[in-house]
Length: 307
Image 1 (cartoon, rainbow, N blue to C red):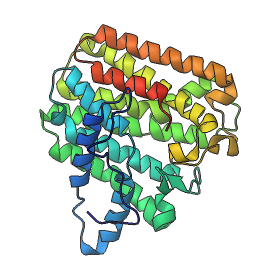
Image 2: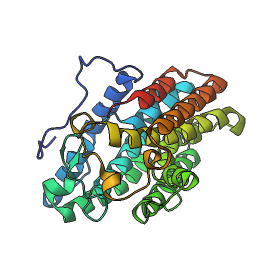
Image 3: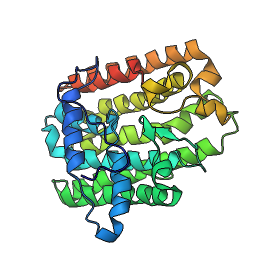
């Protein structure tokens, strides 16, 4: 691996597990991501360096961990879905690179170090994001084992979650928001921008497993509640967190005049809404059955996270 402009922050082998997070799955994801190369040439080595700079910058890896935990819940070995899990993280990282650009959120810090465009320039950062999205699809289609029709179904769900009816559509609503969104509009925005890719982290595994609707409906409800929970807590942390813990600048939404769960509902009500979504997620898991302990750990972590 190239050292890049700052070393990655993998999970230390002796790290104490945080309450409510399956660190062993996080380590599995980190090790897999570190092995990924993008088959570039010497001429494009700088682009690959920029892609890996952001990809290996650390973070909890919530989306790929969700994929591995979902596989375990439905009776599969978590490692069976590592290519899919990695593809989810590549798509997520691409979205972070582009979100941080001056034309979007204009942030200089991500995961505790300079954002990709600060480290490599705006043009390279844009291409790094583009490259990560394309390589995510290649990784999924080339390396994910399973019947072709099920792999294609998972790929279709991933690109839909990232597209106009998902993350990119939500980002558009976000950058065109004048701060006047009400509660329903806010939920719709974040169901697309944040919730859709979190949902795909569960849904894609269900599709790969070929399970019927009755078996998978509770998992889909869990994923929906989890996406809402993640965003509410993110909005709370933007007000109550500190930059050292979160690894990114705080107050960005207020700076840009955007509506958040805190600005619309107030801090205490936002905390209540987070607790309600967490309870809904746990109730869905109780109905789902299966080996859902690690999915429950992820839900608990998201409710109580500090970064």
